[in-house]
Length: 109
Image (cartoon, rainbow, N blue to C red):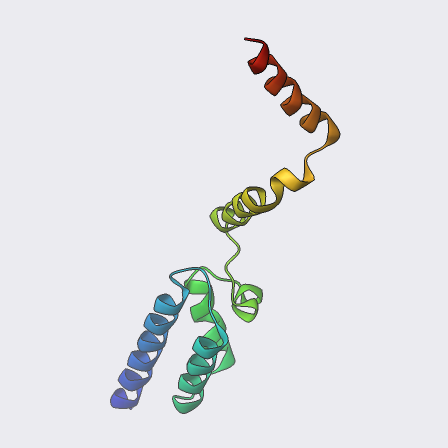
């Protein structure tokens, strides 16, 4: 009985380590998820055990299913990328006029 318990403990500890490695960049691709699923299947890790370990790693099951951790930093990275790549295209008319006024002021100096 003790050997079985130790094996289960070590299996869950190994699975948690695998999750931590995969989750370290707040993203998970389909290949990584398939490998994790295969490990769960081969080592008889229940859905409840899986959900508990995912939660211990700081992810929700929704985030795990989507493969993306929703963090303020991640959202901020997306927002910054968006503005860097698309912000100038979608300026309001007032902002565009202010930019033109600034250019005119510089030429009068």
